[in-house]
Length: 576
Image (cartoon, rainbow, N blue to C red):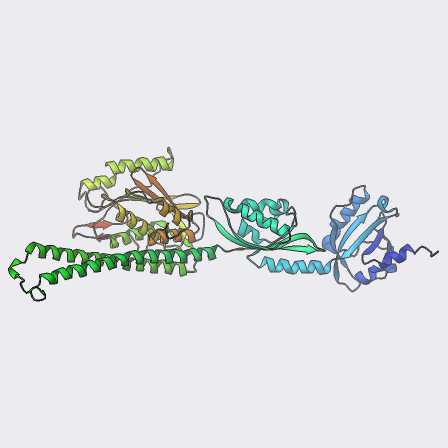
């Protein structure tokens, strides 16, 4: 019968480093693997302090853990990882588990260590790459209950602190848009079952600003079993925004051009028909040999001329609309091409420039009055705004007073803004405000009554345009604010409103629509720059946007865009 093998011989055959420490932390025994791992012979280390070669940054914590164990504490559930010096002076990473004497029957504490240097260096390379990437690199256990790896980009993309996610691995699901959550959960199940997955979904609440992410994941399979799932997530919001912008431009242009050209085609056909009628009345071109020139009906000729003028005016109007659409399209494309970031601007000159654009573009005189920003805190902003608007429409406000002193059909614009408010936005904010005001002027069925109010909070600058126009169709509002997809059955024909939406969206703001008893309230919101101490890139009143007085429509019509008092002793601050 063969003799039993020597235990020391068996220990020397294992790949892991095996050491026995006494209660003082001195080496009592080491297997031969120590030579391959650290470059020392076992007899060189026996009787020495086991902690003497631990890296200085790890030694204190490691010794404290060992002291706790020999005092009666249980070894930690997770193995200890630390650096240890080799015979050549280099450092290797060891992962060690401690076994108590009552577990092994050995007089001492058994430490079984594995060299994980290659693993640590590989993870460091991954961390270096991940730290420089805007993509989120992630790895979870196969049941998604343990987070194995995450980089700091998760804070920017998902808005979640990496440490919080490590404590609550399912926390990222709270960031998923409610409508897309079932889709995400099904993809997670596929990964756990061993299938790869690539999905695009939204982050954000149902009513808030959404962000699109593209997630690609693969299962980690060992010995035929899924042990983990890993992949990356990328913010593709800009890609979705560009696709939507292209779809909007294509839809708007196809719809607008198709409709307008149908009008032109139909009008041209009517002109051709009327020209044929005219030729029938011309004795030089008529085939009727018995044509009596004295039988010409002057009323018919007048009617013919009127019809031709109307048709010509229709073609001219449609052509003008197409040219306007083309100009707005060019403005939108210029905006979308810009790669610049939002910047801090003073809101007062922005509003004044917007009013200047409205004055320049409007074919009739506009009466503009100014109000002081409301300092009354007794009521809510919505109640205060509604009350003031009702009194303004009824004749209690400056705009109505101005109407009493002049042409009652003249559009009325009431303006209020805080003098020192600053917004963090794209510089095209003035075009967006002007577009909203011009839209209200165009669609009013009676004398336009428009109220512009700028309000400032710590976080946002809100520009509200209140009008007395018919309600904006719900399908148009929902399409622009991304609550419906845009298709041939549900589209919006307003290139200008899309420009406003994209100015807000690219500035990190929002565009909202509401209705009241007399019309609409459109609110353009952008981040506030008042909390930012930097003065860089501010937009101050300059020669082009300084308060000014302009003449519009009539020689005696003075348009003032600064709200200051006229030199004339007039009773109200108005443009007449």
